[in-house]
Image (tube, rainbow, N blue to C red; front, side, top):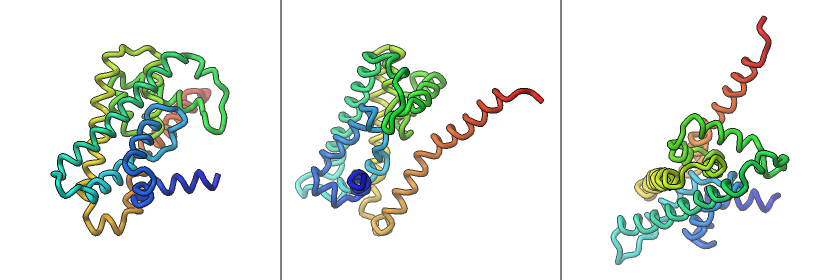
Amino acid sequence: MDVFFEFMRNLTNPEWIMLHGGLYIVMLIIFAETGLFIGFFLPGDPLLFITGMIIAQTVPPDMAPVIYLLYWAGLIILAGVIGNFVGYWFGRKSGSLLFDRRDTWLFKKKHLDQAHAFYDKRGGGAIVIARFLPVVRTFAPIIAGVVRMDFRKFSFYNIVGCILWVGSIVTAGFLLGENAWVQDNLGKIIIAIIVAATAPVLVRMIFGKKKIETEQSPAA
């Protein structure tokens, strides 16, 4: 367990990332978070911001910064798009078996239920919105596969959502990466990103639970 927590801490350390696979490990992590249901715990949002910082600090002297940014952002977007396709395929093949599976420390049925409810409410746009929501973004493509969403429609929202998600956060890190204040306060910025990303999920869980309890409680 200590090894796991050490790994998670290192994923927000630019120097560690560059020494252990560089931006290719970022591609692998983004793929896992968006395509494998065991990847819901991975820190996609802060990792993308740090990726933007790394890109800004490693631009080759013979390449325009914008081209270098587009190159790596494109590869990471590709990894995220493929990840969602894998999740969709997994959901389509496994179907209702996932909802009958017993909870384990790694797999929680409530995560699927939350993604399903979110998907039902938002429709196809949920695939786009889910990209910006931890946990939900892992299970949204799986649910899309379970309910057999039209593949062409899913593909469109998958690509658009990944471009917006990766493009916005990586670009923010790229533009702010060389700012001295950002570098000195990276830990605080990462915490702020995590809070901003998880707040909608937590609010939904808390108030959604209260709403259900209210509806189930007998009238006075």
